[in-house]
Length: 411
Image 1 (cartoon, rainbow, N blue to C red):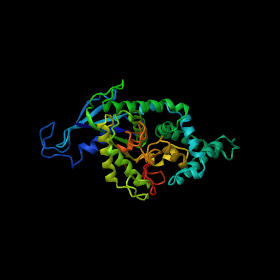
Image 2 (image 1 turned 120 degrees about the vertical axis):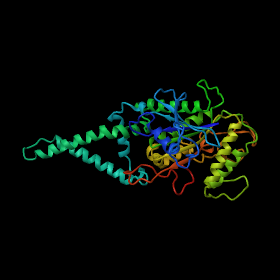
Image 3 (image 1 turned 90 degrees about the horizontal axis):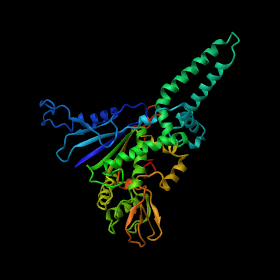
Image 4 (image 1 turned 180 degrees about the vertical axis):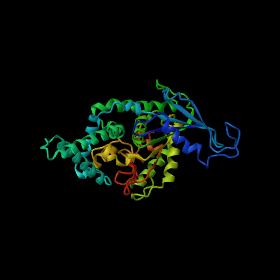
């Protein structure tokens, strides 16, 4: 069997395949730990210094601009195929009006709604806006012949700000403004991006456009997102799993799901099946991720096609989800509790029949009835690894941990 890796690029005027090729070069072609010096160069037959990558047609993305990258087979498994989910072309036509609505939302908020770590950046944004407005007003004041230079300087400053907005902010942060804000002008673009992303994942999982399934080419799919692409990836995974969570024949015996639920209860400090005193426990990441793999295997054995084993976020702004995806921190928690935004581990909900909290619901009456995972339980089956370098007042990067120091929940 083979594995598929789906790369989702970030903001800006991205070129098709550029991000994917750079990523594949780093994680496969030039990784010295993966280069087998005993195998000859696949092109020349000479000594090998890099691993080979072949460009092959991409039958899943439905785009002639894209190719899949195929690796050689490793001794323990088949080859890896790299795919790119390219969405930059769907964001063409961003105007200042798109950006202005988002900027207004960022500025017109109380300091209490500004996330920790972004206060300095928020203040700098205000100061920059005030300075730009001041220079613009000065450029409109009639000159008396003695202070002409103030009008000239104001005009130059206004032109500089306008050029900065059109050549930088709209090309880069315009993507953020249009994707994260669900205003009427943006809804169609958000829908199209997510729909195409879900179609790609379902195709890789062997799900045909009419909903029927065929044996998949891959035994697992890994989704990798960079920058704004991590939010796109998170949304695609959320909506894709919600379409598939009930596609299973729930068995009466679901030992791995039961172990996962018990593990989550222990982590957050609620009731456990063994009757232990409820108190939060430190997360054993290795044990938790091992259980996620077992739960996914059990889910597949029950007929569910979900084979996304991993979500890897690189330089993700999801650390600021309360700033980007919600009104404030309280609103973010409400959206998580109501299963709009999936968390890792998944949100538990109380079952009055068994008097326990679960990430699943009963399909029939009775305490021992088969259970189906709820639509926001995807991270019971998919591991989430966040790779980041801490930002400094937003000037050098936007990534941070997606789990706060006093919480066991990611996002």
